[in-house]
Image (cartoon, rainbow, N blue to C red; front, top):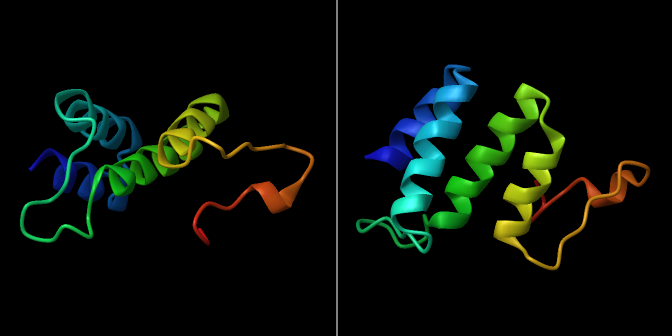
Length: 88
């Protein structure tokens, strides 16, 4: 339920709320997987959190969220090629 609320909050531009819901589910279960569709998992929640932080202007938290999706990933503000994760 928390993951869904995070996505809905993001969609209606309630970014702080989206971050709160997203981080809540990730604190409860860092390896969360949606039980009805295992293609939806913690990486999707981190992506929602990253987008919400982006809209809040907190780019350090964006990078932290993205690194939870891909720990080898690094963002460089001077290299726009580093601004995508998994094609997004």
